[in-house]
Length: 116
Length: 115
Image: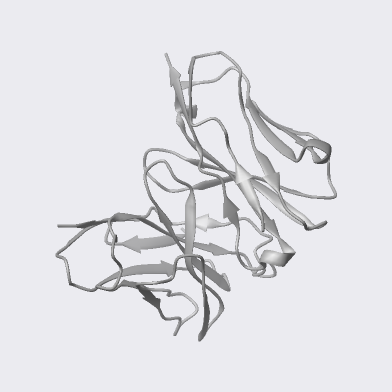
């Protein structure tokens, strides 16, 4: 079945460590996004990519980095510079022709990161 | 700047009751898109509906209906005869041309349907 796969589902990290969250899609979508969700809050955009080898900062990019070397993959690295990384992270993509964001978003099941 | 407000943080109803989730938005764009998503306990957001700013027709899909009113900048979502499986967090989102590539989400409304 087509969809978005995020891994790991749960991740624990010690302070000062970098961690990379995986996001893979087999929907042939051009655009991919990373969102952060905190309890009781909406989704905040971290980074997005509308095409391979290109990406832009979202609203809360500080302390995060991404790459888009393949259409199917958009990994997110949470660096030690991120002061409050404990959160739920969601990866999403949007269909071809709607990379401007006008199409609906397809989401993965999320990765829950906890900093010990 | 664009903004989405979901004033209802939590709603609790008994099964079979009707419930309306409110969404009010702000944007300077004349062309924009509005969305509703459902987030069940599993965490994955599921797309429910998209409406563009030129289409003010209300829509009904089974027990779900949406009321889009540009005059009041609202895009409300009604569930008729609610069921326990409707329990989830519901998000309203807005995409406008001046914020290209970035959707703005409301803070969500947690709906609990009790048997």
